[in-house]
Amino acid sequence: MRTRSISKRSVLALLCVILTGVATAYAAEYEISGTVETIELGPIYLSIYDAAGFDDEEPILSLVIDAEDAADGTAEFSFTGLDAGVYAIRVFQDLNGNEFVDIGRFGPAEPTGFYATPPILQRPPHFDEVAFELNGDIGDIVIELR
Image 1 (cartoon, rainbow, N blue to C red):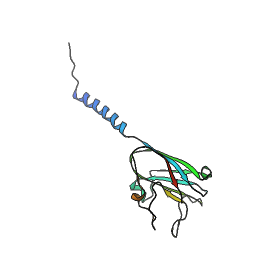
Image 2: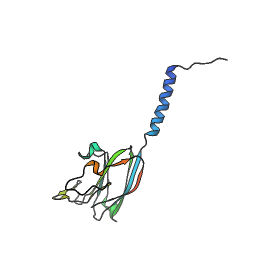
Image 3: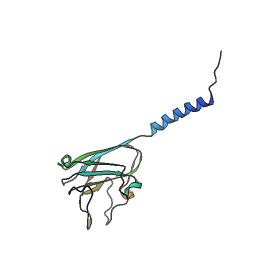
Image 4: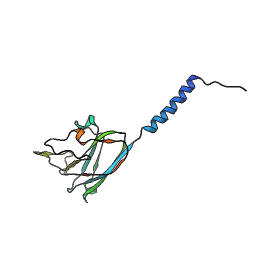
């Protein structure tokens, strides 16, 4: 009976293939979905941020819901392909069509909201005040614009 030996290089290559498959299995992508509630009429802008992009308003993902899709006071949304991590969702409704939230004397002049409700302050919230941890799909959340 003849035996064959396997080279170290072959074993290492096989091990790399196995470990790559295991790492891919653990690199899950998650979804966040829910509804935005509003009483105004206008497009709704949703953005999801990590800590690095929150203060500079550089979102990881953004989407716009047309005014007609929210005419009944609610609009559904979904963010997909997100890695596990800590995020914040910021939402505003653009009532005058200029594509950014207007700031008045005492804060936002247009309806705004967050997934995690911030404390009532005389300043915009900090990331850690509205952040949440994502380690699985999150569905059926409701963001109320005020």
